[in-house]
Image (cartoon, rainbow, N blue to C red):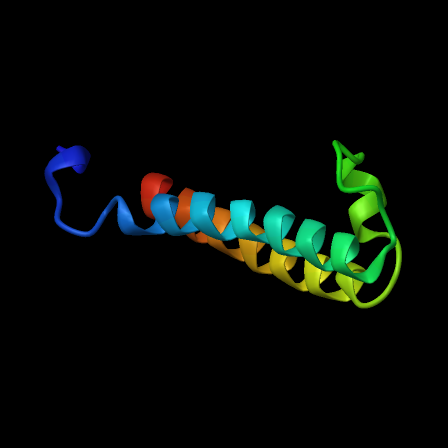
Length: 76
């Protein structure tokens, strides 16, 4: 059974953590740079101006690679 194999949950956990970090880090940078209001901005507004747009794009691309790795691990 796949759920009892050691290390199988590492990739999905890393995917969730990395994707969450992408949103949080870009939000923090956008607020500190004064590009968005701190109270409930749109996610798309937090990644429209440099430098947060570059960091957000890089981290989401890594998330996509992790998602592909997860799919390959599951379906093999």
